[in-house]
Length: 568
Image (cartoon, one colour):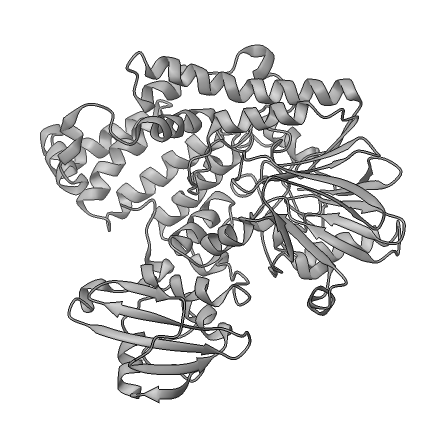
């Protein structure tokens, strides 16, 4: 195993790990790469890089990694280069591994005092809110843990690397909101560093790159997603990443006369020719998969058929920056189908499909019963077909989720499938699913506690909407007013027969009004409070306590320890 104390990877030879994946781990040694006289890139300390731009009387930091502790380690290394004060942070996009270490670099007081700017695209705060608190945040958090191996130890049957970096495990996340945002582009000079910031939607809708014209350096964010094929779809769950927009944004990057490429994942690239060749190959790799998927869709092929048909040609498949180490093209083509046509494949039989458990019961009966199916599954596993073994075992598990013999058999099969995977997200999922099937998954070990107390009050209140237990409120109408003590804001939330509507101003005739700080709502959303009993963080200033308690008891906080992803 790697001796990287900052972010360990597994880089030993093992029959359980494809040699190319082991070799990929060996690239990830921590170190400060000098790009030019004034540009330095910290690689291998975290999943994402931090980039130091040294100006005349201060410095700019591009991306802060996912973790405050990792960020402090990087800052200590940067301080060996210069002791000039940080004048600005730039977030290239909203993903946690780019914003989660902010407080490791700067202090909130300096930001509030105007000494330090934090710059991003204008939509970043909204995407941060969606990821951390709103909508599907609880299930996304759990799926993230499966994807990134948060429940797995580092080792041959656990975490190998993170695909685009060594490891993404977070010990302490911190986030500071931007103080300056823009829409299309922004030209500015900070500490004597001339920068052109440009919006280039690609991996994320809010993605921006930083062009340094005086130094011919292009900080490419995740438009170039590390030394691997880009993740056109992340199995943890994402909104559709339009490949066409992505490769067109790469074409925009190709217009810069860049002599140096400083990516947010992976090592820097030196030389005009090398940068140009990489950007061209990267965009061609995306367009090839997109176009050929559409071509075969137009022949009537379904997602599972496409997964076996669309492959990169040799000159792209063998490119050192296009190995399938993060995502998987077989999964990407399924997402392209879904993004272009939706879930329906054309056979109307699937529109009202027999429920999986009932279909499994009927199929197992037709096949001769449980023992016959399990015997066939064992034979498939012994003959080198673990995928079929897993599919057969799934049928008997759906008859009885407590059937440990079937669960252990499926777990063995999934591990064998996973051993051949170089794409790290599917690999982690296979290994984690095996633990879930065996009853060995301690979900608390991978829980994240995002830093959401600094989100806007309206974001926190609106995030309660998807947590409303609607069936309990179909005859309920209550209006609450919320006065915040830590920010100058007053707004409301109305429960109206199964819907919770956010009110941007204080309602005129609320049933109750409370005074609180944002931390209370953050703890409520993260499941740290029992809304029926622990309302000590609220000060009732108007109305009846009974209404206030009934209001808060109408929301439920998902218990993610009870959610099953593989066992179903």
